[in-house]
Image 1: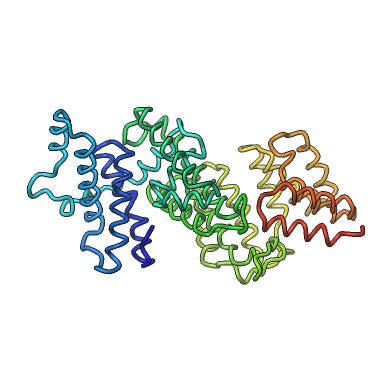
Image 2: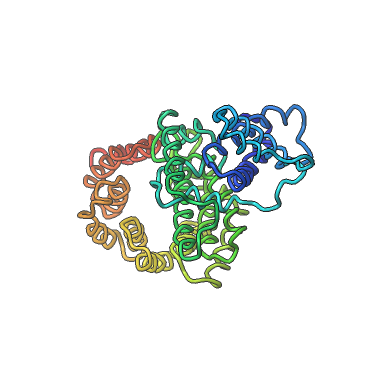
Length: 412
């Protein structure tokens, strides 16, 4: 986004999906509407900082985007049989879009559309960031460390897939809505996780992606305030994001949770996250995001590492294993179990994951095993597992941390 004024940039990021939703509802043709909105946003980013915001920013964007869309249709469909369609799309006299910008916000409908089940998870994420998040193709490509042309092709294919599916720009029917909402939350969770701990590259985190995921989660929560899992996901994001300033040192080196300066944690985000999860867990059926948020809240509530209620953390992981089993859940439960019963108990639980192809070669399995082996006094095995973990991650920050841990045990 080209705006240098952060206030204008934030406003455009908020308005772009609303404008896109209005155009898609009015004209259909998702791909063409999305291109027109991007052009309108660019025009606003260039003109508003110098000339000032219009009285009705949303209406201004709708007007400009509608005109760009109609101009595009005229250019591409100049044949006579298209002329009637173009004429029908023109606003009638006295009905300028700027004066009659609809009061409804279709952003949630747009988010559901971007998370269409016909798309792959990677395409859902990219299209959500582009259409709902307002990020440019270049920004999304940089976030996921792929060439811009590759990301552009991915987004284009996603739009074509939605078009071919014949999906209507409406909220899914109730039976499908719950399933689609799970996809929406998963996409936002993936965006946040990539921002919280980048899967590759020189930086540990991408705060822009994390903030965007939080903004979108707030939007969904505003639309669905009684959904416990929506509240749980937002709480989880806030509680984890609250630690961002304490997770790396001055040189960018990773600082593990038990060594962080907790005075640097964001108390406001912690308070908001705890309030959200406490209300959600008392008012709705328990879901995996709520349980994960409750675990994060337990860590956030400990003034010192030694104050952490590890029995509660372990109990919550047992619940999570029951309602949403997976190797990462068991991996994290092993850490909690080791805090309660000692490192050998944790190592025994980790051994059950060695034949699970989903995690057997994951760097976190090697890293956790190395940590527990070090606590158990087996420095040579710990060093080997730290080195193995370092080789398995594409994050340079994590590599440096794990290699440093291995070097510390040299000569064992």
